[in-house]
Length: 291
Image (cartoon, rainbow, N blue to C red; front, top):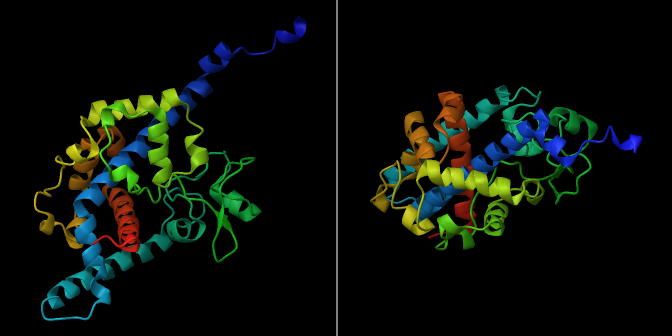
């Protein structure tokens, strides 16, 4: 009997400050996942057709009708390339890896020093030859890039909903299984989703519904947006790129991202996150051939 005195009961574990803090972190992470999914729904539903057409312009034979559009697009692309090049001089999460290498080489998050949340920084894992996107001891779905390193998508990249996710879905009555499938289809690593129990996942989602006032189904919800998209022809690549920080904040707040969380992010970092997400979404739209 004496041997059991030092053992913690499950009730003691859940009352431990560490577990309480981790549970709150899981809820915040879930809210970020779901908020980005909703924003991606809007991007594809409102802009998919026109963005896809705009994205093909540089590869088409120039004509008098498209000459002005081509010129504008080249200006935007030049600006984008300059911003991407600037990522080589930034280390947002201070983990010793520049943002460009994290995004395009290691496929880790430039905003999290420990992308897989295993308490070992991305830099240390890369130096040791382990996968910075797979928790230590975990079994992950791995892919190999040209460098021979095994990579998985980080938690905040390529959150693009599948075709199934664009159908009519009742946002008020999603089950935990449906929510998990949407997140997985949108590129979130399955092992990360499986770390969250059903209660935590649904709690975060329901809070987003309450804060963002989302209702009805996906197609119905898209009648509301912080950006004027009543005329589809008005949506251009340039107009999306040129959203101001205030407009980006307004859009995120409307769809469930807590305002107090956004206040801790400066304008430059916010625009960098938005532009990277837009670039990833445009690449996906082009690859799927939306017309």
